[in-house]
View (cartoon, rainbow, N blue to C red):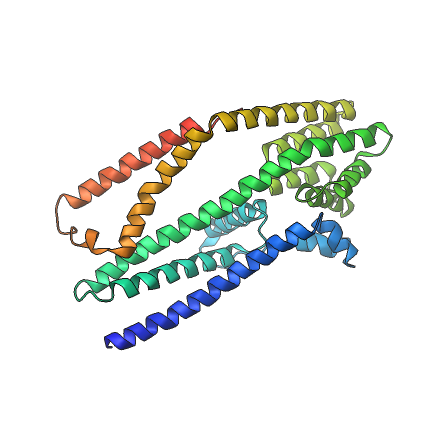
Length: 331
């Protein structure tokens, strides 16, 4: 196969990768636009004519793991799906993996075009550039999904005290707790409004209230929601003044949010430095592997190269753990 044939194949693969990536970006943009237009997705779906069961299946849709890899892959698939749900994404783990690989393939193909002029070591350089492309694509996907997840959980935790106040006032007025929760679900915007509505739907479908709250806490992934689920679940079994419990939870959550924002402001410079120092080494190494892989492939035969690489990886891992322990505050 000549150089012209190889270049043609590279262009065809690049075109395919661009199409997949453009489709993914368009889907994300349309999703963000729809989220801005609606106040509560669940209520909007109900207003469109869908019944409760159809809405519930749409919002709590789970995909079956491929029949490969055994139970371990099934557990990994379930964890990835839960992580994506907590980030507010409706795509399946398989689709996320395909999009990430498409982005990595596009970066790799661009790298192949840059290094195609080299006459020696093309295969080794291409393999090294592939590793760098995968690293950048995976890190980018991870930071994007985890960033969306943190933002969504933060918004839910800010909405939760207000929702508890709504439930508290409804309970004091004599409403059952399910009716009070439904009132809060109708009053609150997304993402908390739809999540509370799903709790009401699950109780209608036969779930115990405690179990529905546990599913809510698992779907959201927030520690405050877990506290709320446990407190109300215990009260439903042992009895007690639910209004006082909700009022105490609301007060504690507001105080915790205030303290968290204060700590967040005071530690912003340190966290920014930590993120930069954590992302810079793998980012620069991966970029160098993509742009000029010969920088590393020419040193493979050196007996000192691999021990130095192992030592650098160990030191980086130790530094990353120490930085995470310093900047992640518990309050």
